[in-house]
Image (cartoon, rainbow, N blue to C red):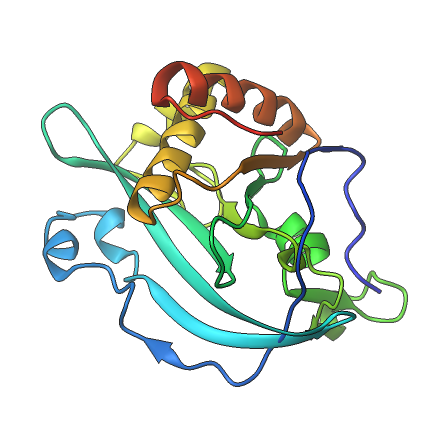
Length: 231
């Protein structure tokens, strides 16, 4: 069985399209620049790997869907121009003009995005044995019901969760309601800018505390980044 769906969701998204998955192929297209890697400086930020981009396909009820998977980071800088944090994300995109774009995060507030990623929306889901509770029998399987059929997905780990890290002891500066939502809004704005997605309808999906975070992040995006959320 699949990881259980979270208690409640904050979401809104228009629906359109279908999905698919074959052997991945490496792509250098979205490799993180070497200059930025050298700029990371000492400490944990320098240990985070370069972006990885692979091609896949998955069979869905509406047919085969080819998609691009990106595992990467979005870099924050402080007032001195030094890197202050890196926000890890996993993105799944399908070719097409101005497809909807949904940003996904879990709750906690200290949870990474793995639960919604591998339990509900992603193109692959983690099955934990016949009763859904046996981690020793965990296996990844294609998810024919993936949300990728109707929206591109960007799954974000808040700073201090998953692979998202701040420089030195700076992580605690992100661990309050306002700083958390400001950081999420900044990460979303960076992704939109770096990937030329300004024209795409944008949505937020969260579970548990992520529902509260989604509402606050939508306001921060409009107030500080000039980005309007569609739902």
